[in-house]
Length: 488
Ligand code: PHE
Image (cartoon, rainbow, N blue to C red; front, side):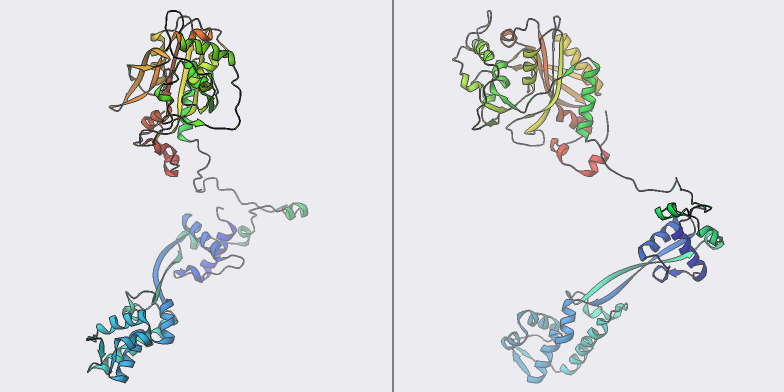
């Protein structure tokens, strides 16, 4: 038996009283409220025991203005009475008696009968009595409307007048049984099948010998949408997976960094335009933490001032104070140099997918907070081909097979290459890469080449999810979050 006790009770009622279609509101079942009855009807229909039809009807009642005018009289009624009493009346007096708002309504309504002011006066028309009769009828309709009506002819007079009448849309179902519903025998046996077991039944053992209703495992249920992984995180998981499979170790860095690490250690000169307030978020703080590796500043400053080996450096006076300023890291290459400082037993293969900050104005292609896919390999034989091969493999795993490497410039790499991908005919710049310069590696005691890259994550997401605007990733559009197209 696939009917619940409630559905059975409603069915029983319909079998008794529902020979002809019956209104849903006329169905009464003891112990069930309107909502329960209504839902049982829907289930009976879904299960083929009943059919319903929906009827929409309207009920009209007085609105707030209607209620008022029923007491005081419609403005046009009051005005006409005054007019018929006095013969004519200056508009000024009409305003004084009716107030400005009702005066306007009265004039507009009377104008429909040809009664219009001239020279600031309203004059009684010859057919005044006849008009009054019509308006009196109108007034009396307010009485009839106060009880509510379903007769549309009663409100035609008032259509288009604000707040005079209120329209209520009533939609009601009528229910009738199908053959299947009519022929089912609702006997006591069925009714007494147990749907749930209460504590009382358990302690009193009254459940013994009773029959239990079966669960309908195929019953339709609502789709539950909860706890999805954000599209960007789906991509991050995938990327981490790719690097883990290649044997890389994940790095974790900090949002707040010393310029000494974020820039100086990477041989970015202290007067480099990227250090400008326009591009970088500097942090001001009463608390001035000590640079944790002062010895680094010594070797780094020498590299800036005089260079290493036969490389000449930038040739300016290095400012140690400048290196101790705090910034929101502008790239995750800072994690690479930090990691290589701490552990450079070759070979080293490291990566991270983390957030960086740029003082940029946000538009369809730029964000001020974005993620970078950073990585580096420190190994005896690492070279440009290794770098290109890694990039090709990484992007191939994500579904991009058309890559170009474009010569570029970064202060810390030589040569430098930008990675450009093509998808569906569109080219997009994904980020930079290169081989660390000796001015970066030698001060840190690195003997072998370091190949490194820093790629934009959101750009990639844009391509993969077909977004026209990079900001859409962070829009929290529920519809998109539930149904984003997975291409990875
Ligand atoms: N750090 C660079 C950027 O933020 C990318 C890059 C990383 C370039 C490593 C070369 C080497 O755009």
